[in-house]
Amino acid sequence: MELTLNLAIWLPLAGALLIVVLPGGERWARWVALLVSGLALILALLLLFNFHRDLAATDAAWLVPQFSTQVPWITQLGASYSVGLDGLSLPLFVLNALLVFLAVLVSWQTSLRAREYFALVLVLETAVAGVFSSLDLLLFFLFWELELAPMFLLIGIWGGARREYAAMKFILYTVAGSALMLLGILLLYLSGPSHTFDIRVLGGQTYPAAIGAGIWLLLFVGFAVKLPVFPLHTWLPDAHTEAPTAISVLLAGVLLKMGAYGILRMNLGMLPEATRQFSTLLAVLAAVSIVYGALVAMMQTDLKRLIANSSVSHMGYVLLGASALTPIALQGAAFQLVSHGMITGLLFVMVGLVYDRTHTREIPALGGIAKRMPFIATFFVVAGLASLGLPGMAGFAAEFLVFLGAFPVHAIATIAGVATIVLTAGYLLWMLERVFFGPERPEWSHLPDMNRLEALTVGAFVVVIVGLGVYPSILSDILIPTLTPIASRLGG
Image (tube, rainbow, N blue to C red; front, side, top):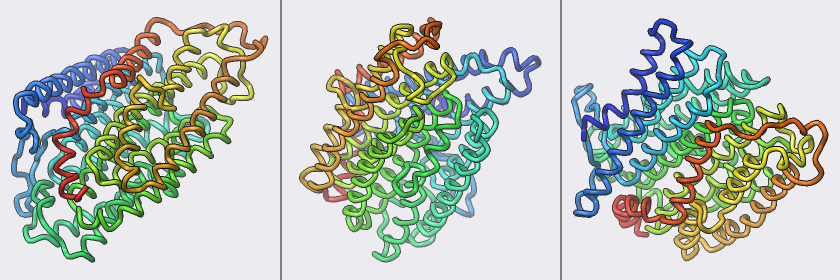
């Protein structure tokens, strides 16, 4: 299975190169992207199947990364090409493959420079897959930086009217965060007894309290920009508003998860003493992000900006789970990464379907369109209910675990998070009522409903969201063996 993992990482990059050199690439680009992303998804699902099968045989085997490959790379620095997956990284690896495949379907009608567009999407898939599978910090950082270029171009070329501004803001925030993260990585490398970038070795070392706290803060700020955490979140609404629909799906679905994964893997997994020191700070930032994101979302009139600000709120639940340091809370935080990726991805797809037909995202300009687009309206309502945490859907399972694990540790922050569900229900249901229901407007009397390809794409989102909500142990059984040892080191 080591070969399977490496193929899943590098196959999309090979597909991107094929699109670039293929004669008549404009015509074949979408088909190559669909084939390559589909194969990458199959490989990721094979890894997931083998993980589940072997996990049923023995829990102890999953205390270390599986499917691992380690090849010396820069021996003078102690760096290696080292990749592998465990219970935390594997679900995100599969999520990345699934969302890229669905993003290709969402982008099927893209005609503007299709060769470059689909090639960049595949490069982005390899970069994110590398982030989630890297066991070497230098390799992790290189994959992290590789993601910036395709996302910057995808927003800056195929985005909306203010695409250059949004793309530049995205790159400035993330590069600044990356610089601080790199400084933290270098301090990790230089401060320990052994000079290595191996995440497993670095996680077993101890550091002086002051140095450990400094490294923790540098890494946290770098990851918090990507998460994003208030007040480092302001790039996100602009990026989402201007990005094409499929790129908003990937931005919300997997790129934000890179920041959360970094916090769980690096801050909590490698610096437990400093994490305990800053756990209250995490809880405060989580509560502020949850409440602030919901309040700002309630004030929005643009559908994309509403969902973007709701992401700030929902990713605050990940930070709340991380702050509690307990196995249940960490499990909820990791579960929220997957559930939010699917739910918010579906929301952006539904916004895209409405915009393609009405050419507006302004809520006051819409109204009564459910009569003309009943299937779009139905699935949009399903997405909204999933986002507010309706039982039987993935969001409920994730948030319930977060609240259950965080309340004994940070009661006030947890109460703030629970209370915000009321605000979430308010702005989502109010948005749905204004967009789809009420008197039908004459200008929307001609709107068509979704076609078969759109229904297939949306249906895939719904199946995963409901499946994880009805049978959450599909995911939680994978998370527990990895997160429990992390919580034990944290004293949770």
